[in-house]
View (tube, rainbow, N blue to C red):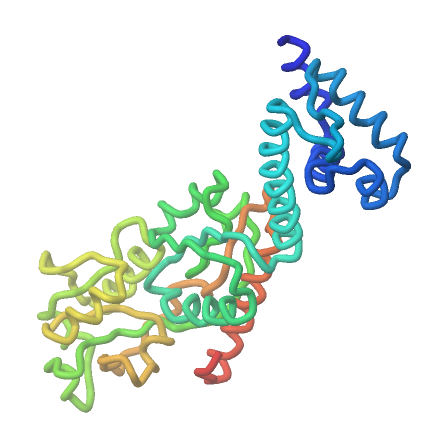
Length: 315
């Protein structure tokens, strides 16, 4: 049986599998020769070499044609499965190389990509429905190591400071100011004019420590003598912010895209923050490059950003 193991692992080729299936299908060597475009002696020789290499008789000649033995039946059954698997692999590889199928793993910085990424995903699913996407939310500190290790293909959100990006390529997509937001029924929403001191008595929804907005926001508020007391909530979730602002007197800092979306239940406070953050963009690992599917996703992110800039809501 050592010879059998060696032959199956080293010498068995896809052409042998196709020959077995063809012989089983037609049970006539002349027909097999016509189908695979070789001579009958060539078919007989290939079958004899295969049987000799395996040390097994795979077919017997009868008055009804060439019939498989029990060994032949076993190998033919597996040959059909292996050929089907090879065909599936071929089709998947072709789809992957064209970018029309595959799976993309994306890290999202929620507070800064919650509008851009869904619009880009909508374009992707319209044009490449065979491409599936896994989206993971997190802070910059959590997502960049995943991108470096290859567990993520892309990270979408506010671009970190350049000194943090030595191993990554970046593409700027959307310039969005950071604005201060409340619910529409907040006491400050009813005031026609505001001073920074008016914010002092209200609690905050803050980005967590380690997120790229936290430190610049704290410095900007400190510059206007707005204290951050101990009454605050830390989250990156737009859903939590949206829900809590509607039922509380909290204040939050959000991207301009959300602030100008009339469908959102927010009020924008008329106070101008300095440019706290770099633009929203996309990052990928410089050393690993991009798969065709990820390349398509980057182009759809660019298209979605352009639509947002032009004020186009449809994708």
